[in-house]
Length: 352
Image (cartoon, rainbow, N blue to C red; front, side, top):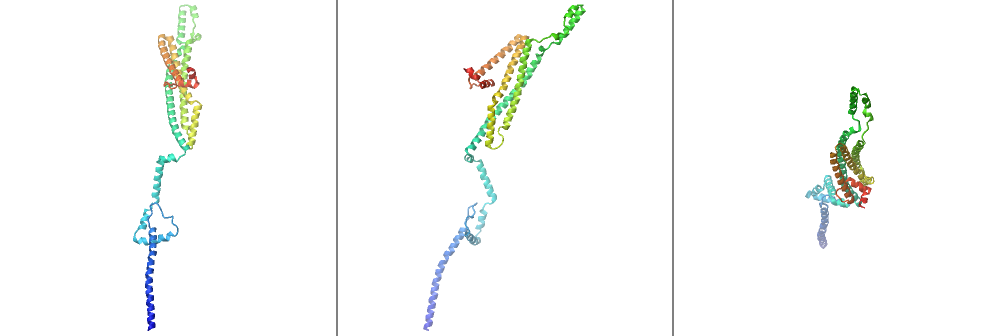
């Protein structure tokens, strides 16, 4: 009996010790479960839109699986995270908007280009403004020359046709000579009839003054036609420069080609050549006035004095304006003649 009681006592002690060790195991269990719950909570944290959790290493995959398996029953947090992720179309639209903002921004154009690109861009703007004024001015000048030379050539031609009779014999002179011979024969005055030439045109010679007047008139007409021809050429030259000034290529290449074309205009004195066409027209007008006054001098001197006075007054006024422009480049009465004199260096001789 004593042995049995001792064995029973030892068994009771073992059971008591097992009961005491069981709470210790229970106290160790909750930390493990808490670590698993923390890892699951970290795995289901919703990231910002547009950022994917691709930077984690392979060991993170089991935690994601555990978190998904545990969170899915509680709520649709994983599905909400997937819905918040932007689609490819949304990303493409966002990138297009960003690019549009960058293209319209002035900050990119100022800081994104080097000095060379900015120089050629500024050069293109300045050259476009200069060429616009240059081409517009010369186009209007050539159009005015064409119009005025056409009208003036018509008037000059009419005047020349009216003076044409002074360069050829009058047909009525032959008729009058034949009638005179018939009258002399009827009167039996054969000696007088034989002395009168039957064809006066054979011995006719034009008047020297009439020839000189016709020379001046034809020179005036020729200069006006030459000015019109020059205006047509000027329009063609301007059109060629307008179409070929830039060429093709990059902005720098087009700018260099334009500068080369403009240097050609300066080297070949394009401005002086084009400005000489109005000078030809002005000289033509002066010659026409001289021819008109000389012709009327032999017809009616009183009318000729009026023409001569007006011609001299206009010539003096024009000469004074040309001299003023030659002396002072800031004079507002600039004319093509003053530019031509300045090119020839005559203005310095006038000043000295």
